[in-house]
Amino acid sequence: MSVSNPSPSGTSSFNPDVNYIVEDAFERCGHELRTGYDLRTARRSLNLLTIEWANRGINLWTIEEGYIPLVPGQIQYPLPTDTIDLLDMVTRTGTGQNQQDININRISESTYSTIPNKNANGRPIQVWIQRLSGLTYPTTATLSTTIGATDTLITVSDASNLAYGGYIQLDSEIINYQGIIGNQLQNCVRAQANTTAAGHTAGAAVSVPQLPNISVWPTPDAATTYTFVYWRLRRINDAGQGYDTQDVPFRFIPAMVAGLASYLSIKLPNVDPLRIQYLKQEYEQAFQLAADEDREKASVRFVPREMFYHG
Image 1: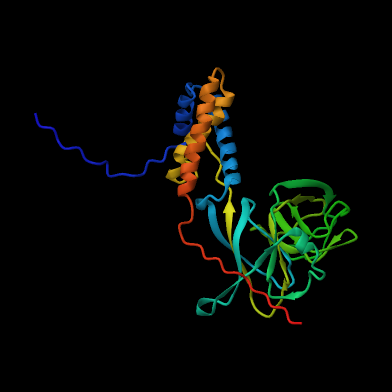
Image 2: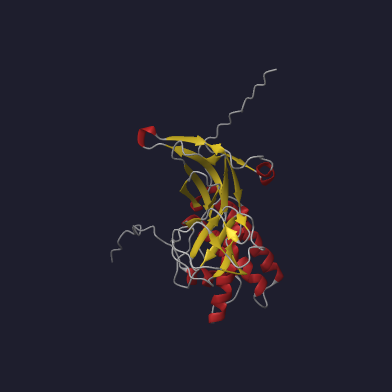
């Protein structure tokens, strides 16, 4: 009887869906996945796990490049709502071979607040990043008069609880406003955060979206066209349904299974305390292995900034 020589599978696409990840995590806890509630509680823990990973450091697969065309006279611009933070940013002018990317410095809230003239015009060289929640909150205010898609003055029933400048939402449109006089919102910039400018009828509810955003200084002038180019960290996608694959590279699948098992061991009944401790240690080791691999491998060059003072 002849036996053929074994050969590799020829595939390298193993990417288990949520159901397989949950099953393996349950088995590590000494349990079986049996009910719909078991899957729901595991998906909830899986979402909490990926949020925890956002607090552990930079996940390279969640870095995305984006850009915002800057508008003369406009200070504040929204970021995508799933933005965690910005890593690097430049001000871009020109196109093609004439394109120039010039560094723009990140400053703190305290530094931005001390700038005496925030409306000064020029090429933006500094940016303050507000890392807001992305949630939207209702207000008691309503739209006082019907407006069209191009109106830049908006009157509401009561502006006393609105910030002097910021964002409002009418129906599905998000609008930036840059001042308030009485109950009238001034210098409104329509169709923000990839929404569409539209007409709105009197009585429409006014809500306040807490959009992550940037404030640039100086305010862009009209001398040239500026583009704010950034590299951001985004949130990891939610766990989804049982048949969805996870928004992680294959290198992190062992860490995800180990982390979910550690989370579940605390919730499931009759799990031995020694097993809980072991699963926690296994998770930390698995995550550290993945995190050590998921890092920039390029060399880093530090250049000191020199300043000269003339007496």
